[in-house]
Image (cartoon, rainbow, N blue to C red; front, side, top):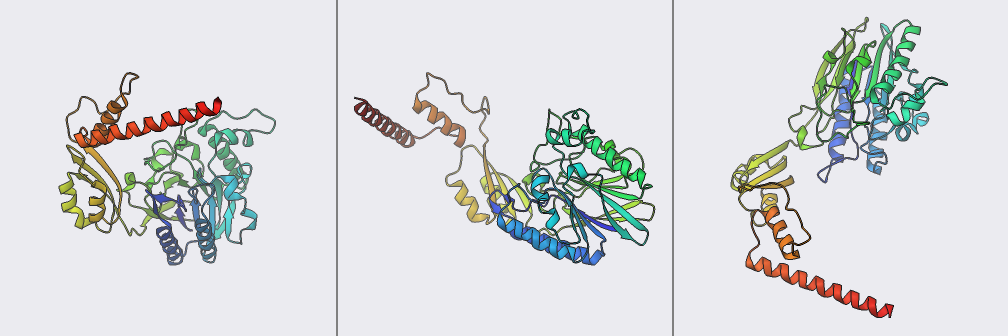
Length: 397
């Protein structure tokens, strides 16, 4: 059986204010072409299809168009993540057309989708993001106490239900879609923290007993199989198809082609996704960055400018040289006793506070002209405050 595995589309997301809709549409076109090219029996999407629980209209329309086109070619199976939520993504599960399966029912985890090939059926189980505060009740044994409030305990209970179902059915080939943080995975800045009670992850061993685990949540494509005891399951994060932070600039984004033989043994191939714009971090003096700018005219850029004092009109100068500049940082090269922001004391005058903040941000003390402006602004603010207080006293009398 051929299975395409993807996750973490985050439809509706932006990157430092840049609308990613057209790039997400390009990925959907790429994915549909790969489904046709590979002849995949199933496409699995392991959570975070939307970026937030109430997505923008264009994101909803894109998902509907994409799922409709994909369902013409293969069986589509998806489960919610921590961004889109089981309740919100699952509300339309009964309205979906044949060939699209939304596995969002936490209490019905042991009810799989069956997809057949020439060797028989493969069962697909969906573990949506399991919020311990809710799942500890819905997954608790009937009449029993709630489960402990941890990701591990609720995931173990969910997988126990899956394993029990497989045993009843004689251990057919099986796939689990799970949106979670497996301990040992390599994260990035763009993933939302899953911590509950200080613990955000689950051990890989909880997924033992199935043939393939299609993981979602971490945005880097990575093989987690070594963290699951025994020969099976094979477990992978497909990662996100696009980069959603500069911490992902070194990722090779991909979808996974999973080939499962008649006995359930799995081979996995990475298929790189298209990258129209790279994410580049330029770090150096303003001159060094401007000199290299022509090499990055089509890339999204994070510029880190290192000078003794902040150059005048820094953002305008960089934006003119780098058309797709998204994020600028200034870091002073001056030797300072502390890199911490200045502490404001009760005794400090407003002029001193503003001057210290100016120095902290720009790397230089305000000039005489700038100091005069600060004094004038403060004088105007005091005058307005006195006038407001005077009006208030007149009304009171």
